[in-house]
Amino acid sequence: MKKIGILTGGGDCPGLNAVIRAVVRKSSRYKWATIGIRNGWRGLIDGDMIPISDRHVSGILPKGGTILGTSRTNPFKHQEDVGKIIENIKKFKIDAIVAIGGEDTLGVALKLHNMGIPIVGVPKTIDNDLSGTDFTFGFDTAISIVTEAIDRLHTTAESHHRVIVLEVMGRHAGWIATIAGIAGGADEILIPEKPFDLNLVCKSLKARYNGGKTFSIVVASEGAKPKETDKPSTLTEEKDAFGHVRLGGIGNFLGKEIGKRLGVETRVTVLGHVQRGGTPTAYDRVLATRFGIAAVELLKDGNYGKMVALKGNKIVSVGLEEAVSELKTVDMELYDIAKVFFGKVEIEELVDNLS
Ligand code: F6P
Picture 1 (tube, rainbow, N blue to C red):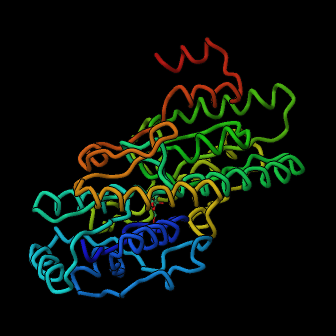
Picture 2 (picture 1 turned 45 degrees about the vertical axis):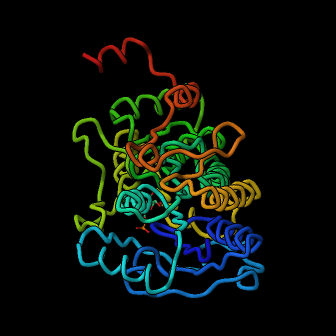
């Protein structure tokens, strides 16, 4: 091995720089050179690269974002882009690639691996919805930010006797809403995996008021959807290169409906990209560092087509197919724990709503 290319693709995420630093430092121990591919797959198509060495990664461990830049480029949308990738790999004499990304970036990595390009993946996403790994780095930071937001919303909701709806990220999976909701003591958590019945949500909130509570916190994933439509709220129908629309609006929908149906003052907070920005937690820095080191070890062993993963407390590797074949949705045992703290709806009402 002589030269490793590193890239970060998809939405940014706290801990990306910690992975880059670990890959560069560990590679230099093996006397391998590293080259930074700028803006995800875009950089490999355009030949936009920067040499990256120990001195470039000095001080980046606590920094959010990615020093390499990122994009949601899908080279398989235009076949000529795949040809350019192959040319640039030769031109820049790249021997192997470390791709740091979520399902889309690693889906591209798998296709390139199947074409014979030496590549390994590192799982990144604040959504924690990548299969094959217990956790992705970035998730811990996101849930810390959301938990703090819920704590802050609690005091103001309580003072004003309001319902506050908090919309959080989570396109297909409600990990952020569920875990931060449990940590922050949310009174209702709505996730994409469980389309909700608005009547029941309102009844459950009403039950809290009947029980003497004068405020409520509702946490909703951006991908949460009402049973009737089974469709998430979207900001625009325009799709990105991987076919995703931009989600958003469920918080405002819920705020309006809950306020109207309950006759209680309601406010909405949409947390947005605050969840993805800024410095990673200690946990994410360590996980990202362990992933980076393990990715270099995979390259050393010629173990291509794999993604490093966390299983229990151990870093292991899984095939890229396993990582991208299906999304990891919320464990319903965990959601059942969250539900214990929702308002109590009488059994007869649940039966009425089921029939
Ligand atoms: O990275 C995943 C994610 O955080 C999703 O939860 C969200 O839908 C998406 O990114 C939004 O990203 P952007 O606004 O950068 O397109």
